[in-house]
Image (cartoon, rainbow over all chains, first blue to last red; front, side, top):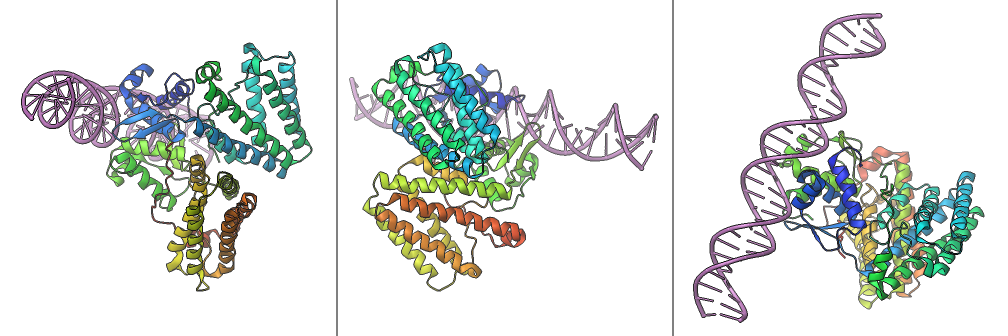
Length: 245
Length: 245
DNA sequence: CACGCAATAAATGGATACAATTTAGCGGTA
DNA sequence: TACCGCTAAATTGTATCCATTTATTGCGTG
């Protein structure tokens, strides 16, 4: 969608501004202000805002305009439940329709990458982007193996809720045990898939995702300030789900 | 979203035109033509089209405009898989967070309504709208009982794929056995929920939805013409999912 | 001082005008 | 006749302008 049209550029720019926290939840989005900030007119901006509203990043009230959607902590945990269910579904579906060798090898390679990154016994800030990318690719690989484009689309939508994306790796050095456990899940999931044990992979994946959500929410409840500070978002990788088919 | 603004009205009108088949899959949507047909200018129409694109009803290519999205039969069955998974999730979640008596009674009342409609031993066209409404309410009640607004939203999105909505009741008199079996599922689901057996309810619900998809797809493959002719859509009830929270 | 109302400012929604791109039609040439 | 390129019409994308609604400010009154 992005590329040449001003509306597409504005959509990407606005999405990134929201997800990166430049625009705060609840804050109204003034069309004049933002359009001149982006160097475009209000027309393409309004197209972008309509798009992002359906994406779930903005809310709209007639004659009162758009504002950045805010999410309660309670709401965030509930999205994680959906994401956990969907990704578990992906494991079952992937096994059901047969995983080809290329995918199995890809998973093995990815797990090895994770091993290497964590081999130092800690995960410092410099390694975060790489680990994040690894994590995204691992999950994406499984979702694609399910051969159901809608899964990709629906999981992608859960990522539109701030803080739910698997681009987010919350744990740092002080929680290395947690991230190590999380990566151990990756090992077990990959093995279960290799053994065509879809149910087992699904069970691990469900817990894997749901626990991540609970850990995040726990942190948010205890120390919102610090949690937000530690959050770092990926660069604008192609996380916009394709809606082909 | 609908109500007073031209964009909202256009969105609703366009959605209905697409779902009712007035606009054919793959057909490009000409802005001049449609805007004068709806009696509005292109600006709100474009807002509506951006919205419906994110809803999944239109596809967009830059500088080439919007087209009515087309769905392969294979794609339709895959959406039913998602819907089945999500509604099964709803059953589990509903039991987990406790179903109040009002909801149990509502389900009982709804099931009784279904009994009455089918008591004649057939389902003729005159009864279709009522049975459709009953079906929608039954499923919605369970989804709401899960107390996870995102479930409502995500299931709602599956309904944006033409033919996947539970507003669609395919079977008529000639397939009364099928619809009777389907309603028997309703009975069993309600009973399992009353007994707080979330897993059992989920299993029945999953099969309930998935089989409906398979039956529809079978028909589509055998006799697309006749299937489409028999399909009748509900009036524009409020099936647009609220995105509050 | 508080409350209410009115006038004014500001922001949104929609329509029109203009620019850029694509598509279709047409003619010429090998 | 088939193919290529050019021109013109059609269609989309953007900007600007106007109307309508909402928010704000300030004044007057109780």
